[in-house]
Image (cartoon, rainbow, N blue to C red; front, side, top):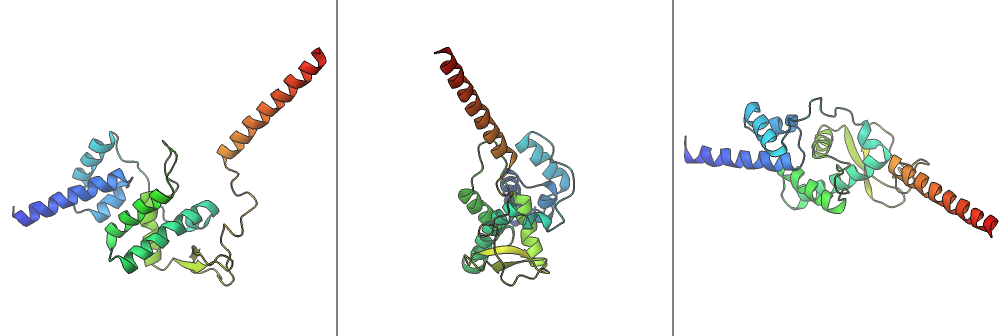
Length: 198
């Protein structure tokens, strides 16, 4: 084996390790890394302690167009575009660099998966390359957001300037509100009991 091929194999292993640490699925690894499937499976199990998740990769653009994912996807793709246009980044390196910068801006809660996974970010770039998605400026804030190429995007307003009525009504927010309501009700009950006892 030549010195050059040893170096390139070491680089491929390093790339695979970094991608796995960032949360890459096996299909992404097989596309971007030239190591065998068996080698990637072994590496994944060594690093994660479990087998990689099964199932297909996202194949629909719909997820990227829903309210919260659209904001995260738009942030990521703007960073990616800047790196490819101005920093000479290309390919999987550009995706990884953009994803790390995205995580710096939108760090997930401890123990919680990022809303935009590396695999979704990688898929998003592929959707842009195949002209299934594009960016359009918001009429109000002028920020650029992910849109469907087939939609009429004239006078487009982003999800931040034109929030849907159910925005932010996540289970976590609902649970927190329910807990606060229960606590307020208990306080009111205790206060009423104290008044009656006085």
